[in-house]
Image 1 (cartoon, rainbow, N blue to C red):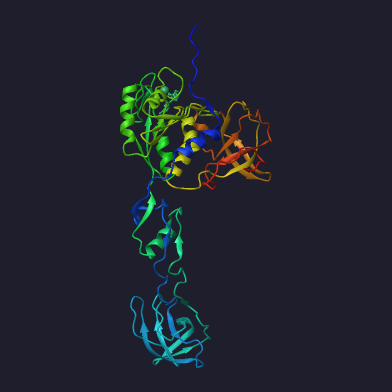
Image 2 (tube, protein in one colour; image 1 turned 135 degrees about the vertical axis):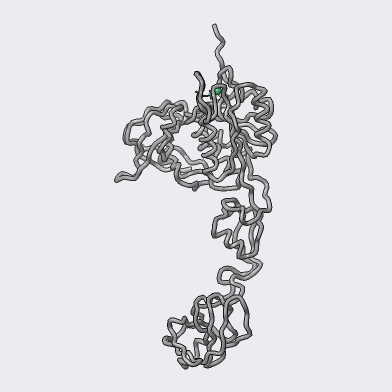
Length: 422
Ligand code: AMP
Ligand code: MG
């Protein structure tokens, strides 16, 4: 009789697995980076204004700088103040200075009347309407004042934030660097996308699928030029190479119980395995280890398993390295359009299309959920969560679903049972 193969690793509930990952990872050490390179990164310092913005009272329209309380509707034009220069002009009773948008307000003036509301002839301008004090003037410090925190640590840098930093003269800022992930496909049966598979071989689709998943969320990704065969020495060499210069390594394949599943023993030898099995479907053999202080995810080889595990574990882990606080996509209650079978031993992620209708949000399955069937992910916009400990779901029942086309909104892993609050 053949001996029964049993795993050395406990089967962790999803929540415990995530907690182990979260506590092993912290944001990458901040670097001082040029403003042109920080788009999408997380600020690692508070930015305090060293200047008022705007630094001087300025016209916000083209027109005439005047004293609003002047009684006369006619003023003698004594000069012209353009933007970019501070002339020694002053406005006194009965006079006005022609002024352009962005130009400093001359001494004495308190408002600007737009050209549209005036007529100028022979050096005299006639005001066709009254002007309020402060009209069309941006006062000193309207945006922010000296000493104010204008951006706080943890802010995600987008166009507005980077514009603000530029306005303040910060040509470099402290940010958490963009995590760089190496992707390594493993399996004797794999050839590259450019090769024609021989009998028994298949094309490596995981490398490009995982590369796309990583770059789509703004991370830097590199794939190995070739899949690595199931050979301990080749795997060790490729792993060492891939780990150098990356913040994380993601492998696919070779984490199950087969004779040629060599990733777990290799990781155990080189570092520490923190997760060896998780009670999820797909993705049971998911492996997470720390080697030389760097995280390594060993994803199962089945194309759907690897992408679902990327979505559920690798993406939030990369976000954590990047310093982002929001790790989880919206998790919402949906109504099942059809019955779903579910074994209670694992938390299952079913690919679905969620659409609003009169009942709220309704979820339709994408068909056969076999973990090799990539088409079950094509067009899906949600992962339905069928929690561990629950059985089959009749049509019309309510389950929680991650909306996989929506950006992250939550710091904490959501609760997977409808109606329950964290
Ligand atoms: P494994 O996890 O190595 O047992 O592989 C599970 C299944 O996924 C097998 O049918 C493999 O042929 C397939 N597979 C493994 N790696 C890849 C890959 N990179 N691209 C496509 N299919 C793969
Ligand atoms: Mg394999």
